[in-house]
Image (tube, rainbow, N blue to C red; front, side, top):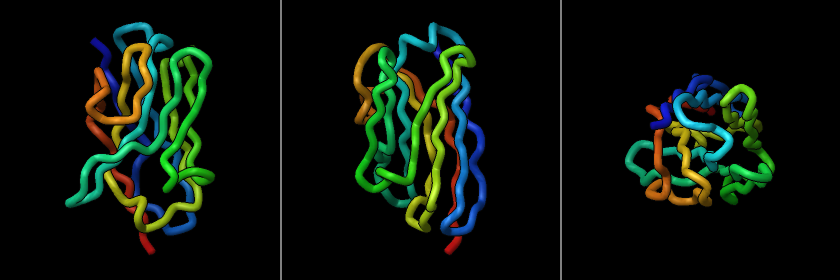
Length: 123
């Protein structure tokens, strides 16, 4: 079992920044591919960003490329999502997810999920 706890969400003005954190406990964090997903009201959950378990390779949805940065600190068992130049359309519940040694681009591929943290961007 892996437990994931997100934090860092909140209310921010358009153009502002937030950093989300995902603290993991349980299994060996470094063996897990980490991802961030989001779900806006009335919409499907969508992929935002991912980082590989081995070489820290990162990849992003086109909608956030150049504005968001995913990272991980294996010593702290924590993944991060730095969000900048936020837009109203970034408003959503953001979820952290973990997948054991496999690429994570679809929420159905995740082995574990966090409870989510709300991000509201006011325009």
